[in-house]
Image (cartoon, rainbow, N blue to C red; front, top):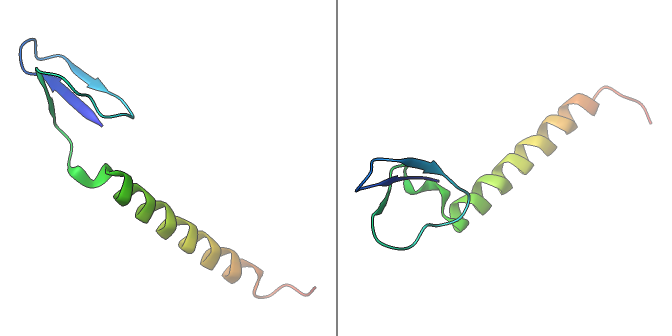
Length: 60
């Protein structure tokens, strides 16, 4: 998540939430823990589907 300091204008990119005065989030809210879990689950589902397609022609 990216935060901008409202006093100095400095920008930081961190994986945790920043608390305290003087910082504002400048990215969208899509990186909430729930959104991250949903995105991870979607990527896993897509990865498994792609693996199934790749293995469709193989004999065991």
